[in-house]
Image (cartoon, rainbow, N blue to C red; front, side, top):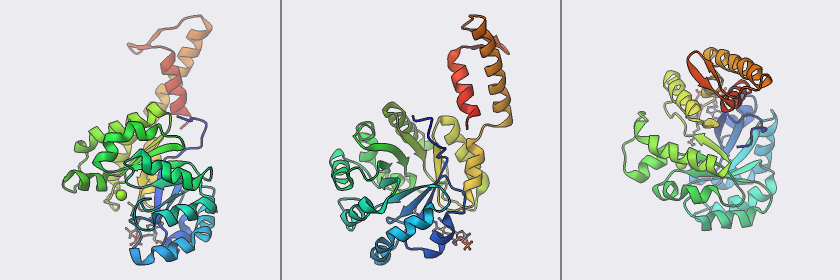
Length: 276
Ligand code: COA
Ligand code: MG
């Protein structure tokens, strides 16, 4: 995990066919904007959206956010043309949907060259099975969980409950961390339900994800708050830093705080929390 990078707490999908949404997207406060050529765009509008890629990219970048492009699947309609356009449009990353096989990732890599790192959406049963290998492929720098397509792939019902997704979520996060790359949680699709989102984003933050996907701008501040330390966590972290620095100065490795054992790893965890 590259801790020196700026925060990547929120990833807002912006349909590449919506000039209206693109125009104001840079001012919505998202850490990452994902210009979407895939499922957020009707097939009849994809070509025109691809033709406007440069302008859209420039508009999205105006506020300093990281700007990624979600292409169509490389092996499907439009996928190759999307990648070719992405290779010259200057995106910070290219997000490949429905990533399942190393072969498809290599094809995308060949088209893009060094133009942009790849992020992979893990959102099918084969993708979830292969995620540990996919995460380690050259050029891959992030994994994004896609829960709706994943449910479809499993034959599961669409619902807002999340416990049945815990297994795959943990698997994606583990694959990302084992490979030293970013990991992001899926969106909360009931986008008017900000309380539901708050709980979901908090669980993602506690589990260790870098951030969470968003489908509507109102979700961004809620996600940012969930990924920031709570006042209790901040107070704990400040005490840990004080106690451990003092212990270190005395040549002591292990100390007790409120009946719990603290060692150097807690100091690192506390500093990481305070940096969020
Ligand atoms: N990105 C940027 N701007 C967005 C946005 C998004 N994803 N979703 C909504 N907005 C804008 C709207 O254009 C509107 O702008 P305004 O200030 O000019 O009026 C404002 O936010 C408020 O939007 P609202 O009226 O509440 O919702 P809406 O009916 O315009 O849009 C959706 C609702 C679901 C259609 C829209 O949020 C959307 O398309 N989301 C993305 C869906 C998607 O990409 N899915 C695929 C990835 S999972
Ligand atoms: Mg999807």
